[in-house]
Length: 106
Image (tube, rainbow, N blue to C red; front, side, top):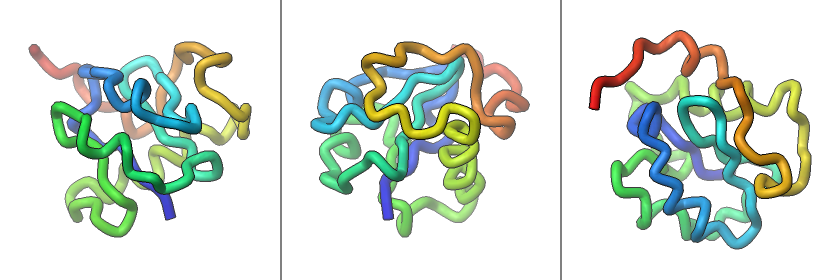
């Protein structure tokens, strides 16, 4: 099990979760952040600091956001398990689900 970042993060990317993550498993895509399931230690530090409530424990992801479980997996399909987001920096792509979403107006 792991934590999952959902739709509320798209085009927001506050990054408070990145600062709280003790294992550096939250990666930055072009339009949202993603948690690497194999690197996450399920500590939950990221969830309460998210200002838009985009982070859920995998079993608690709302039904209308269930596709984001797979989107978090898909983001790492080509990236693999680099072992730390900080050394990777921002990636210039997103999971297909996220890339296909219309831009949010702020």
